[in-house]
Image 1 (cartoon, rainbow, N blue to C red):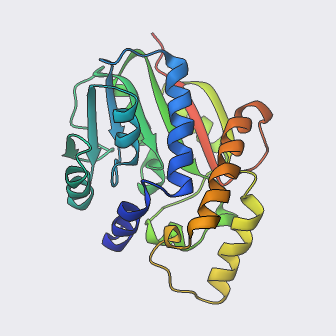
Image 2: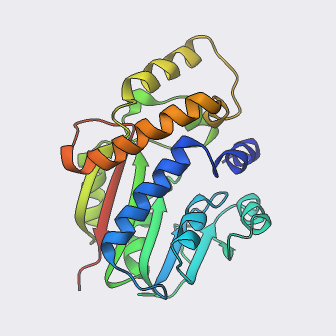
Length: 244
């Protein structure tokens, strides 16, 4: 990502409705796994530390972060969010079968070879280990945030699940989420493009009351998406398992 995008995220991730809602969703997913506090966990693509914040709050003590950017490493260190090593998801600097849980949330869309990235997630998971993967959905939603974040693509659910399966991972659960805000986000991105509004990051397009309302809407969304299985959403979530 661009340095300006890291800066915007570093300021926003603690309280912005999107990051808060995702942490709540991931915390529920992880809670269902009943992992011990000493479980070995890898957060790939830490960015400025939103998942590390959540894992710390959940009480996990054996957490490793990885990001390609020294900017991300610096922000996480400044916030006291744990150890972040420099490295790529395409060549994870960890032993085979090292982790009970790997988080790769909004990461694989950043690389050309997402099949290699998924193979690497499989490699470092212990047999029976889990992975939580999220990606942006629908190329029709392509907008300024995709450009600022240097995304390569957005996905359809069937496409993502096929690639996960090809890497040898079993999908335990998968669904579109952020479906309640799909329409407003679609319109907003088209308007931003039409009027060529310069934005450092969509995270900047936020204020107090709107943030509060969207946080509640997004919380309702993420709590209902797995049950309702909507046919569309701004993002896709998948919980996967390495067989064995």
